Image (cartoon, rainbow, N blue to C red; front, side, top):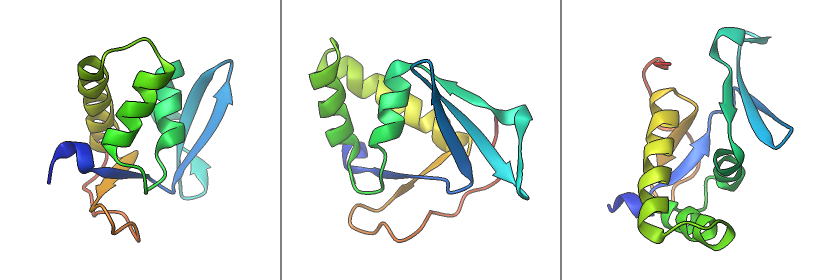
Length: 112
């Protein structure tokens, strides 16, 4: 499958809040916020986070970012792919098979 057809879902154990145009992500473990692993997303990262819904493909996210921001298709694709790979390595999002959005793919422990 092409990377651009990947679909991502958010870890249900992540709480997010938008503060001053930036998204703050806090992992919740055992009903307590893990303050050692807070993630701050800039404006574009926040928009990508908002678009991740378990149904929209990476290609569709890229196209929305190109429409909304002054960025080329190639640059958006490279930056979004890197951004989502980092979030996936941290255990914040998981990729699922396009058309099968019923659950998260099993991951190892987060690495950030």
